[in-house]
Image (tube, rainbow, N blue to C red):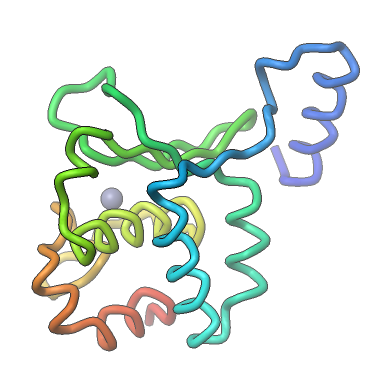
Length: 150
Ligand SMILES: [Zn+2]
């Protein structure tokens, strides 16, 4: 389904008064500083408008549990709702830069549309997530690679 059709579909759903689907996107307060810095970093790399537009249709929230064990963050794309979720108990314990590595990785999937995980080099799109101290040490190179993948 295209994005345009998605919104038409959502419009139909709303007409039929189903308010559980196609709810407006929401961003939890804890993640907003990281979303703002993601948009700023996108702007530095010439991708602000595109990222802002896309982020406006992706919910980014903290959840108390996942249906799969050992998951701490996830990007889910569907015709009804695109969302990034982080495990609340884990997220709250992480350092500032580790949170950035978590949020930027999942936004890399959900907002930048990167589907693959990077292998063999330091990258925000590696799985597992990179450590916070590596993020801060190599921040400029990591951001360049994320926003301008080859
Ligand atoms: Zn991933």
